[in-house]
Image (cartoon, rainbow over all chains, first blue to last red; front, side, top):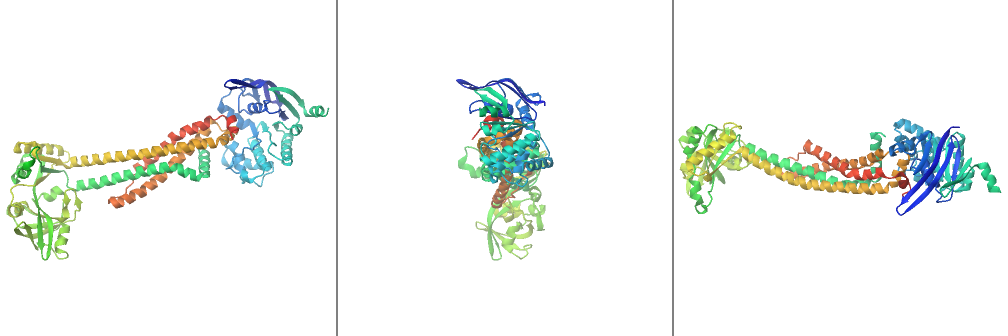
Length: 236
Length: 404
């Protein structure tokens, strides 16, 4: 499988005036196309920073980041926005849907920024909502949807532009166990269909449902292992 | 992202906050409304005045006696003894660009016809008066040269005066008694003038016109003329005509301060400069209202950007470039301002109609003032929208996404 994501010695330093915070201290790893990976770590470990850098929302202080064969370390803001639009599908803990838009309009948003025509947009958005099992609630606004439904809309939105990677930040964090399980099933299904999925979480149960876990601690990778071994480690 | 999509997004978020949108437009609405109605009042009033002045007659020159400075105690005699009838003939013969010089003698009299009596202005004139004043006879005839040379006791009535004195009966051939102090003079009506309306210098329709010689010899018992009305040979030669009159009268009277020459052009210029100054002043005040409206829009837009920080973060995460966010907010500001401008034009139109109704002039709104008002309010939206929009576009997506 070709490499979808590659980080080489990535560091990130936040300059907080008097203090410098080293969020990442040199992180290197690769993720192949079609993998389903969890990035785990306690809060303050640097996993959120890593996610922002992987999601092209931010740039590393040093090191290089490659996404789908493109070096995204030093590109301009507008180019980054373009890469986010085309290559990355975000799923957030708090869903981050626009409250005034209907489900289908929310899913259309990345397509609007990609410059698609109105009809094509609507067609694709409806297909995506169908794919996540929300074909009947397309004209509802987020406040008329349950948490699980909102997260499904968000996943449909993430899928809309056929991105290289789906980046999910605590996708089950705001959901009850049952709904969270349904969302994980949906993500597992997308993985089986060939999507590359990265889930940032501190929940071991969520991480256990992926195929590989990268542990982050104090800005460094402490362990990087397939899930089978992680389970064994947990047992012993 | 297409322009249409941007516009749709902007309208969408404006609709979501209808009350706030309207409130923030209010400043612009009032400002534009004020500009449009003030300009309309200005042009309407100006048109009214201009129409009045040009009605006076084409290429009209008026020559009035004036009070020299420092002779306040002897005003009456000095002024009255300035102009004579013969000066009118001399001016007409000697001055190349002056024609139709009409000596005019005015006075008030009590007119009696049948059982009716009316106070009216008597105006002693010569035949060219109708040409100079651009005035028309409706029925009968005007005063002739023969009437003047023979001091005929004939009268031509203003239209309104004719109705006041004779109501429905035919005034032609009827007799009027004019009473000034103790003298009575019988005048025979030979004509009625066409309605003229109120103009600068009195109500033409309420005046009685008679031969200047009859007025001087039989009624006013005077040797001097009240003022002259004359015509320049053409509108291009108007200022030369004024100069020639000035030169002639200075030589004749030995003092340029004892008379005043005014051409219609000068009058028009003076009036238009007055109304222009007024318009500029009022327009300036209205522009301040517009400026305040613009600041109101900026205020609301800044609040809006802060409130929607998270939305901006989401949009950026989904791939909205800086430019797209900038345009989105700029479009909102411009739409607000332009919409406010359009409503303001409507408000201004209504205002102009109401004020025009009471002021007695047409509440015209020129296409220019609408264009300027719309252009200006759009510009205000652009100017005051650019800062909030730039602020929104500059937001860091990571920080914007974590904004609570």
